[in-house]
Each structure stands twice: as structure tokens, then as C-alpha cells.
Image 1 (tube, rainbow, N blue to C red):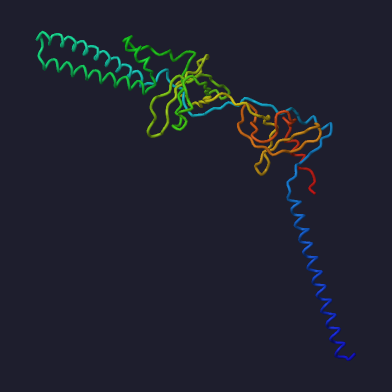
Image 2: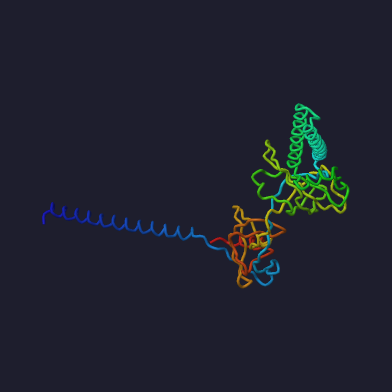
Length: 331
């Protein structure tokens, strides 16, 4: 073989070897990339944190089955302690009685005028004047009745007042019963009814709740604030409430809702804002669960998503388990 032929053969062998090497390297790189992606997927898969406690550590927590709790459905509004009656009611009641008396007198005068007119005892113009007087008195009476309805008086109460011919004095302001008022949003008006239970809190007695019920709901809405006034009768056996006190009025708008609950000491808020609880099946190994919560009432937290009734959950000392989980060495 000539020297020129040997060079061609050697060059071809070198090119073949280089192509094989590049093909092998690319295949090896693709495999590494795929393995790396698989590894990333595995490491990003969420895992539940589990903590094992020794017998001595169990004394730091309390465990109980998940149960239900009756959570009240309430609306809370800012209000105030008020007088026994709305100050505007007394003059409105006085106007009503005056209008009723005037209408009665005008009606009697018209009846006499009609009798006299039949016997030519009065003229046509005098009869027409008495008719006009009676109509004017009737319009004034209807206006007075409407004003009292707007202040929350019922038709039965108005009729009784007219029949009695006097204003019934309000209950004594200094006694076992006081009054509280709250202006509720227009959008919430359908939720409120006379007789609904209320709880009133005042700054002077922060640990006390004065119980009562809605006694009257005004018939009109404030056109500027778009709120309606709700008046409540509140028990005050020790005569501690004073008119003008700032108050928080909590109104129960529906019957309590029975829902899954965990004591507040069994719920932990993590650094990222999520809420967690700890469950167990053997009272030794504890698993952290992410939960969604709702209402908080009397130390109980409503669970919207999480442990179910009957599951064993940590009711006190959840923060202890959380600290242990955070102290575990990371992989």
C-alpha cells in the first residue's frame, strides 16, 4: 500500500472514532439530564412531616378524638347604650294623640253639621268647611301614625295609645333592663328579626357580656349611611350600664352550626401562613396535616378541611411538636 493510501485509511479511522465518541457523549449527556429531572421531581414532591415522641415527651402534649362544636352564626356591630325610649318617640307620640283628638272633634262636628244641614240649620258653605276640617284632621292623624311606624311602633301599639288617650310611661331607666342600639348595614337587614338574642359588651366591663334580645327594628333606612337602627332590651341586674356608653352589639342571626372543631392550642400557624394540626394513630408517631379553618369561638377553631371526627389529634402542645419538626436535620 502506498503512503498516500495509508494516510486515507488512517484519516477515515480517526473520523469514525470521533463520530462514535461524540455519539456516546451525547447519549450520556441526555441520560444525565433525564436523571437530573427525575431527581428534581422526586425532591419537589411534598412529604408529610412525622415526629416520634418518647414516653417522657408525651407529657408535653394532650391528645383527644376530633369532635364537633356548635359555632354561633352572629353579626357584630358597633353601637351604644341608649335611653329607655328613642328621644324622638315622645314628641311623635304627643303629636299622634293631638292629631287623634282633633280628628275625633272634627268628625263629631261634621256629623252635627250634616244633621243640621238636613233641617236647613247650616248653610252649604258651612257644611263644606266642616268636611274640609275633617279631611285635614284625618290627614294629620295618618301622618302622625306613619311617623311612629317609622320609629318602630306597631299598628297595634299605635291603636292602643289612641284608645287610651295617653302616653304610656317608659320603664324606668334605672332598673334591671337597659337598652342598646346598633346601626346595621342595609345589606344585612333581612338577617335581623325582633326577638333574636344579643350580647352587649362595653369598655367599662371588658369581661362581661350583657344578654338581651332585639325589641324593635326601625322602619326606615338612613339615606346617607345606608344603615338601619336596631334597638335591644338588655338585662342589667346590677345597674352598671349608662346611656351613651360605647358598645359592641353581637346579634345571633341563625341557630348555631354544628361543625368539626379543634382546640386553639392544637392549631399552629407556620411561617408561610399555612395552618397545621398534628394527628396520630398510635399516640406515639405524629403526622403534621395542613388544615383550613373558619370561625373561632371560646377557644375552639372550626375545621373546614382537615381531620375528621374520631381521628386522634393533638389538642394541646402542637407548638411543641412543631418545634421538634423544625429541629429535625434536613436530608
